[in-house]
Length: 405
Ligand SMILES: [Fe+2]
Ligand SMILES: [Fe+2]
Image 1 (tube, rainbow, N blue to C red):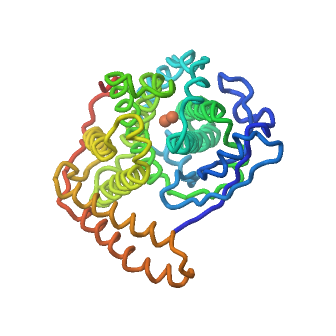
Image 2 (cartoon, helix red, strand yellow):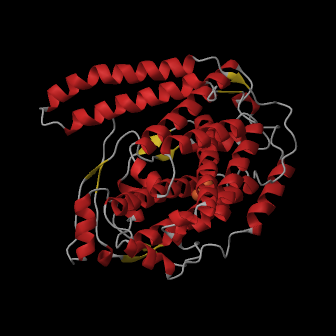
């Protein structure tokens, strides 16, 4: 299990202007120190002491990741002379969509934010901060990857490159907006520090396509589901950021559609038995990661009036239905066995976490973990081997930008 340490600083330690955010509509963006999930951090920050409150937090496999890839291979994939499947007119149309920049004036804050944050206290405050941090990290991770792809593909395929750059603009906005949210809680992430200090996970281009397609679509379904729920149940609207999710999620939807177009341009990633196995693998890892993560944070979802497991299953089912339009195979997530096994994994994961909390020496802890990890692995394997749903189509419909709801 990969672990990393991160540092926290209260907001009084803001330094200025990270150039990577110079294209954000916030103008120059504030650089802030990294992450907090521990209570001591919030307390330290609340005191607003001049000295940086440095608190170590533990990151796990379930923490949002930063990705890097083989950029040379990416260049070859998007070279129109090598790849005759590239439908440039489709990418041109997509580029126009991104240039339209529907959300240019959407992310504007008001005084409601700080007032609402001041009213959130007790355990919910802590969990809220963690939600903002994790979301900000995930958005920022997209920003870094898309920014680099935009830079690296400029010569080979300027149209695709520009789309990546415009997507990085969107992700910078999202990350920036969440980070501003953290400032309401007197905290913030040091995104510059995060860029340098964090480990990057290497994925070959085809895995980047599967993983990012899924994360954009699951992001869309998460945001829109929370938005709709709070619209219907305004008594749980405890912080105004959720009101922005309706337009925000359309950005994620567009990003997902772009990856769908990219996958169509690389039929070798969609049309053989290996593609089917990888598609199922990525679906499984994305769904399980979200479920385990969210079940560790039920206080957050309950705090906004959601049933965590119901919310997650809704998001998984909808994401899976969307994904089935492009992936050649998906999981049968609507089979009750799937949820049963997910719930079993939650139980095992809780036992694993409990082992970490004991005062045993590391060797004993590791010995206790072995059967639990084996049990998790066996659940995962069983889910992976459940009869899949054949899906996708190589005769893809023309791309049309669309609202899914
Ligand atoms: Fe985003
Ligand atoms: Fe996105």
